[in-house]
Length: 160
Image (tube, rainbow, N blue to C red; front, side, top):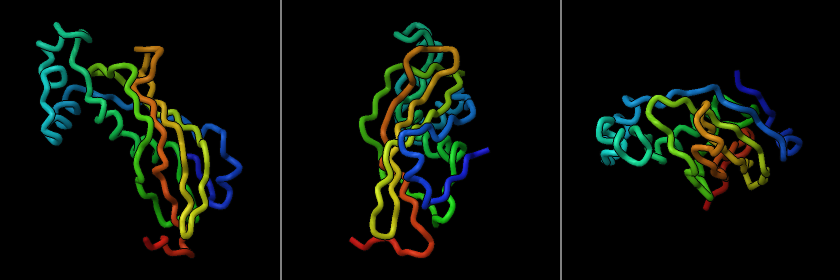
């Protein structure tokens, strides 16, 4: 169950963990579907037999597949009341220190770094660390997201 934050109380959570998502399995079927959707069918992802002889000893998920799971995992961690919704603004400093082997489970550990008050919106800046269950001391990915803009109901988004 996600933790709920009121949009006006987010400043008090800066520097604190927002939470940790449930474990999510990244199986070979998910990897194959991602490869199909992105036209990235490199053998290290899509050919488990050949990948078993490769540098990681098995097929591995695309780094961008791991990154693409962040919005769904973040929604499992927290919600914001008093806002019309979230807008994915992007990610910064994205790194993939450890491979996610097919069949692994991952989860997202989120820390709120800053809250930016903008005209008609509040932008959350958070660090996302995707952990691998029992597999690695290094995370699967680490990134910063100035991505979740929560727009209060009573205000309109700023025009550019």
